[in-house]
Image (cartoon, rainbow, N blue to C red; front, top):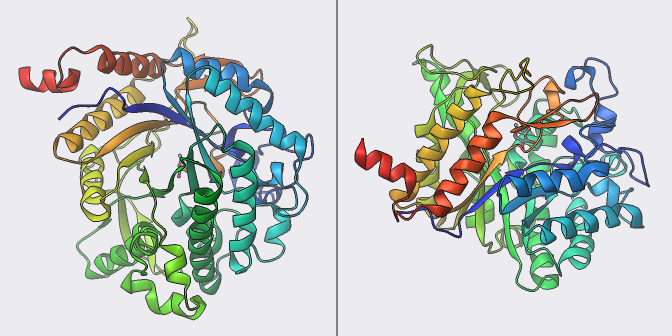
Length: 452
Ligand code: FCB
């Protein structure tokens, strides 16, 4: 099997993590702005008021994407920038920012991938219950319609949600992320209303954008029991239901995983499951590393344990298991029968600028080399993978870790805002170029394998 010449090589970002300009030109608070104001809550007491100042530096950032030879770029719209109260009056200045970004991408021949929701819910809607309020499915559909009509002439790739499992579980179940709620009822309502919002938005995008290519972005990782204790095995099944299946299953097959069905049933009205399971065009995958699950007293009875000592780990302690990535791709292929786009994969590392001004992030290069090799294996074994987007273009605001974790292939000095491509950026650009120019239909990795 080959990496097709039309394969998309991209980079992903999200609005809250890079834009800054948090209170400029009409943007109102999101739940994350508010959450971060509570000292000790999350984010190392950092905030995202300025972040990477991408709002003002988007032209420079698009030029970086182009210089690396990427042919796709994923960003998200900040809902509270374009609809400050979440519904009602739109903010023209906010809408115009994304016009500028999209136009810059198109003139650089980079395909824009627009994600509607990467966690920054307007605070005004959170005060009405946020994802716990069933009406939000309609508010989200109206927001999708605004975005579709404004940008649908130029953007064709639309994702409804980024990692619904993470923002529902961490935001409404465990209280680690905004809005900081830890309540089982809240979690189960949120799961169902996000799914409903997804289905409603798919309908709107189909209706309003000619030629739209639509999907959702799911974080999927194997959930292994951390030990041989049967309690850990049971916990792993519970976590897998919330993490891997609570969204893809209803969206593809109109049913909740058996572990969750009874808990969510009280919120499901007639017709909901058909409304959720609207046909989509692709499966978006974010993948980093497997979970090693331990029984826990938290409200889902499952916690994140350490990986066994034999499992290699990244600089921030995340397990590095490329085979799990390959197997996840093959599993998605078998179960969902959709083209797959990997829309996030990457690692944080302890990046430092050396005396010559370079960032030699060999750990990141090793991670990306191993994971892209696993991607090729999955393709060779039959998975229909059409694109790979690295997380992330820039060092940015990493949610609970604030600026302490650097995921970018481009270093950002958060004081001067200077951007410095790391060694991994060059490695990524060279790898992409090698794939594009290879006269061997099996591609460079395959040739190495044949020789080795
Ligand atoms: C994912 C998020 C993304 C970033 C990476 C490291 O879960 O979608 O915003 O935080 O992890």
